[in-house]
Length: 138
Figure 1 (spheres, helix red, strand yellow):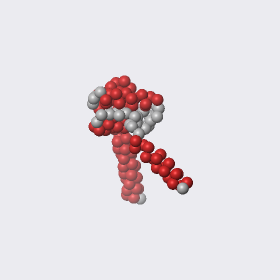
Figure 2: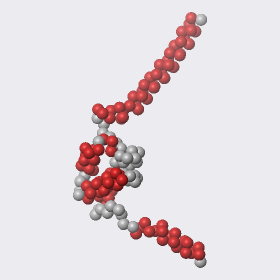
Figure 3: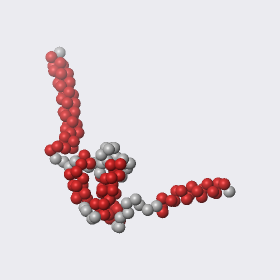
């Protein structure tokens, strides 16, 4: 009998999320998808390695509410991103645009990889050349 009560309580606890209303109710599934997509693409300025959807910082809560209001007003993704970028800079975006300021961010890893390959190739080539030259002289 006691196990039945425990299982019933556990079931009730786990199923309570089904009846819970969303914190940010929107009138269409399209707007909900837009809202969730934006929260995943925007960075928490306090936590820096978390998106707005996962962060519990006060600023993230405020930004979530602001994004919610803008989505509710019918603004597009680009309008919302442009507004937040103008206010907080490109750092709020997880995928900053390619421009002169972010050039090294986007292409730096590729340049370092190419530089490493060139150094590796030249080192191997010089080693072979030294061995080949020493064999001819000897």
